[in-house]
Length: 137
Image 1 (tube, rainbow, N blue to C red):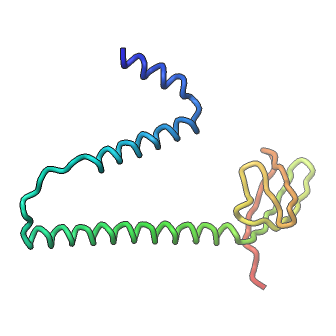
Image 2 (cartoon, helix red, strand yellow; image 1 turned 180 degrees about the vertical axis):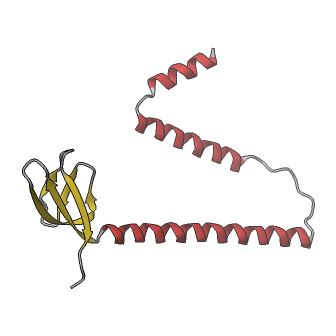
């Protein structure tokens, strides 16, 4: 009976945003349940056990710090790389013509580019796109 209720609840919750919110709330509730769980009474810790626990805490803090620093570095590199201006040459085989545009790297998509001037250009499957870096002047 409970399994059927869960299946019907899952079929009701088909919207991905609502599903993400529910999963997040479930994880938070589980974490609160785990934190509030009364711990068994401990025996008095020895100095060696206390030292090991402190070292483990520092190691975990260091890993979290390195992870956050690496994430921030990757985010900055991605932002900086997307802010580079490149020259995009669009070659049309039908009209036998080509046009060159300056575009931010982050504004290049599979079927559309947005120039530095804000012009949106839709690309067809037949056009050839050549991307080259802009020489520093």
